[in-house]
Image (cartoon, rainbow over all chains, first blue to last red; front, side):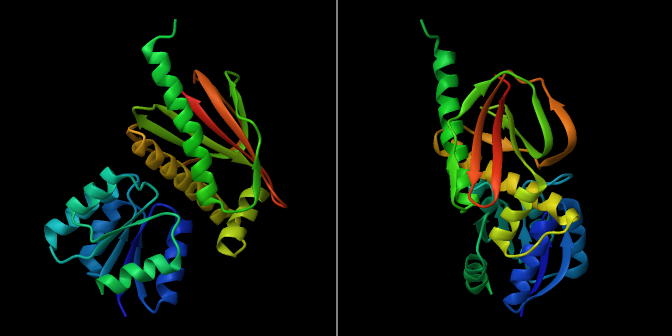
Length: 118
Length: 155
């Protein structure tokens, strides 16, 4: 069972991801609605996995990923974004993300990523 | 004679239309029919909708409008649950984000680079102006109702 931090500015999407992670047997230990909160919560909670949206107010997901990875090179971050263009995926991977899930996604797609990374 | 900037804008409009239709079909896999698209310069009246801004090669906004019950029924059809009023705004914003993100991905594949803002919910009786023209598409979802997708073009 992994401990998960969910980062998304949409409460609805956080609820969906929480349902999926919980159903897959993982524990959601925190939720953040922007990149600034995500970096703070990451330091406090040290989760095994972070699901990270990209387009968010205050600090976007790519910047938050860089910030988290600069402090913990072992952080496992999955980008979870509606923007699936190649450049966006490349930017996320360069920032340190381990995988990229394009919204809308299915439970199976999330499971596939978790199975690969855990 | 047609100038190269007009040709380029026509190409962008074609990709905007194709991409938005493709994106909404992908995000909302519910039986539907599209009406013929319309190009207008009239101000828009909005009761309830979600607005997402585009920057980059295409500058403008995507507006998705429908009645509360239509957004709610789509949420229920997609996720199998009824949404509270508070969660409905969040779902509507996320629906707009997913359609706008899908369109942005389509545009990138056609060589048109864009970025999107996070969604703004418009609720009440709002009049939108300040754009040059609007490309509007009406989508009719069977047993759910109608939705209007508008691309507000600033160029």
